[in-house]
Amino acid sequence: ENKVPFSQTCSVVKTLGDPVKIRKWNVAGLPTDEVSIENGIIMDKSRRWPLLIDPQEQASNFIKKLAASQFQGDAGLKCVK
Image 1 (cartoon, one colour):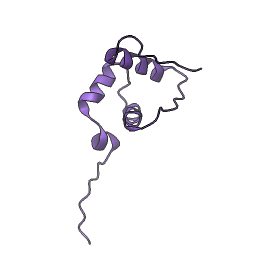
Image 2 (cartoon, one colour; image 1 turned 120 degrees about the vertical axis):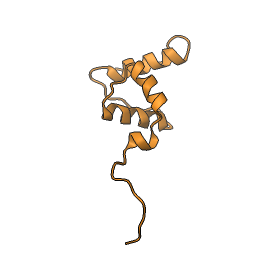
Image 3 (cartoon, rainbow, N blue to C red; image 1 turned 30 degrees about the horizontal axis):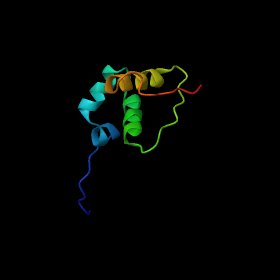
């Protein structure tokens, strides 16, 4: 009726994701499934440190590898258990 343009295939990854950054995350250990990539985008775009519930320690390993590739050493990251 109002002819407002829209897309049937809208997604967080297509809207907010940077393919180069997502590929770097995958190389650093982020799983390639849609949910993990969406969580990575939310973590990247947030202003505060995220609270990660990570029973398999995938996220903490990914963040440590990503920080080590961007900074010298562990970049002062601490994991609280």
